View (cartoon, rainbow, N blue to C red):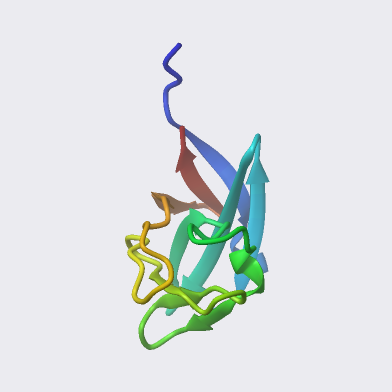
Length: 108
């Protein structure tokens, strides 16, 4: 069965400060929401190298990356590409939009 993607409300805009990492769960998906210079990003929240929650990681605002707290691999927030080893597999990314006062992400 194919499920059509849908926009899911993740949080209120006021809950998301610049350079802040927020975890969001939808069904079995663990999603990381972040904001840099008023742009909102959404990626998978679990590192692709080892099971580590990226919401407890470190954000580099200048490079727009998130660094895993376990083995220090970083990923581009825009497209999920790993920037260094040991991670080699990109994070899944999700489209985001702000509507009224809420942040939505497009999930399948």
